[in-house]
Image (tube, rainbow, N blue to C red; front, side, top):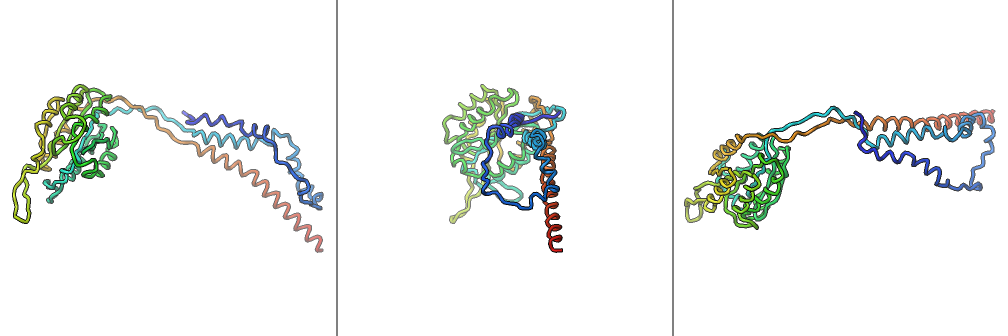
Length: 345
């Protein structure tokens, strides 16, 4: 089906006639005219041009009028719409909240045989997880001292992966606002279908900032039907080396597992403990087993732009006056050459 996306542009169709009718032509000065003593001898050459000038004005404006109409049609953006295609996706609205506080720079994870910080390990595992979530709407919340929405819910998994990989430790502050991250999640999931609201929260510490406590936010999440899966990240033992020797420490001493577990249980979710990359991979593999729900159907109509056809035709028609002018100039040059030759003889 042919359709104009901007049909209101056709309102400008009578504009040239209005300008011709109401705008006065520029005044001419006869004293400045160029005197041509041989003009009378050109009557045989310019006869066609004179005949054209004597034709009724209605015929003279046909070609410019057609060109103007074609330009307006091209500007109104004509498109050809195909038959409607229904797209139905199964999945859920899955928001991911990732901790970017200062403690995420602790290098207690092993990735491909080398020590890496917690955020690098999280990115490596989440990239595979995001890639597998075909059919889900994914969103990304990053939080530290403050929580902010990095990616709204979208089917564009590549964008979510890119923005996750571009995140950096401390970019949201060095503290941990878990409650605010939950509150922001509720704000963006509360209007989605009830059986598809899921939050996966990953943190390595306890709530140390924000306007709302994690349990208060979890209570609101439960009222809105949001299920929370919480992941506590960090090794339980690592060796610290210094000038005085080495010692074993617990880098996850600040992790508030009890609050994370209460949050998950309050909303019907689960709490997971990830001490290394392998456990983190298993957790996300388990999350892949969440049952999908049917989302609303979307209708897609393939379209093809057609503006170049009227635009190209207008360009071709505009060459006709130019070609007539070129032919007249050529005839004039030939006449002048013949006249000069006769005078020389």
